[in-house]
Image (cartoon, rainbow, N blue to C red; front, side, top):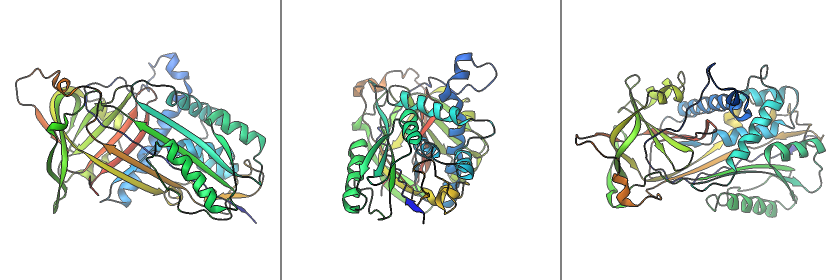
Length: 411
């Protein structure tokens, strides 16, 4: 009888979004790239990570047209790529193809070395922001991981193996929840409700991001204003406003404004504000063009930017969502995860949770928020007072850390 593998993904985001004025880099994917960029492993996997992000977002947007969306494509990719180290045959192929990798082009070594280097960059000490990710394997004390799998997850994914008594499901649940709470700076608590008694292995991935705006909003300018959820629903939200120069693109078709809002350091928030009633048109357009295409059209512009102050969270059933993207066998009795323990295993559950906080905090004094306003003409007002899309990118890695949609900013 197959032993059930319980696979659990937790990721948390704590970010303080702030708006500033320039994009430090963009993805170079033409033949004129320098040799250094061509051979860097983390750059080789970046396009695949982006494809996975667009595909999953489009799927969720179609399934939940009126709901908030939030997830970390990078976190999901990291965890399932780590799982693929123990997968074989069709199970292995489905996982990598589902994550956006063409297995006829990518070698396993290319993918694993790419994620290894990516993790090294993500987890190096930073002055301007908090950004870290952690992988862990909670292993039943009665089973033994295969030596190669154990060495590979440690080498490529910096994962630690933690002995766990899954026969005492309550104790095991508390042990895992405590780990997640600690790694997410207390943001995600009691995430795991229960554990199946047949569980022998829990795979955990956490990611924490605490960003500081390059230019903070002045809290004194935050006002209660209307947010138009849809044509018939209006709600009051605390709206932050700042005037300054940002990289902006006005896209006539399908009708949206794209604004680059950098943090201190090497991350940036890209806000996509569809014209009224155009949210789903913009989302459909993103299936055919990459965000990079639109960001290339950005130019410095003086604008008055308004964004709601909000907190949203979202939980995804990855077993359901990834199965629709072709990752099926790993969740079924056809799973071949024999590279983990040598015993028959399958993934019985996969959960992904994200939390996003947006507020005014930044390291700059309030008076500094007016620096750079030099024009006397009235600037255009980019007012996020209706549903919008956002993406948080790591500029050095050319990777999407988080992406989502805000339909209801206050719940």
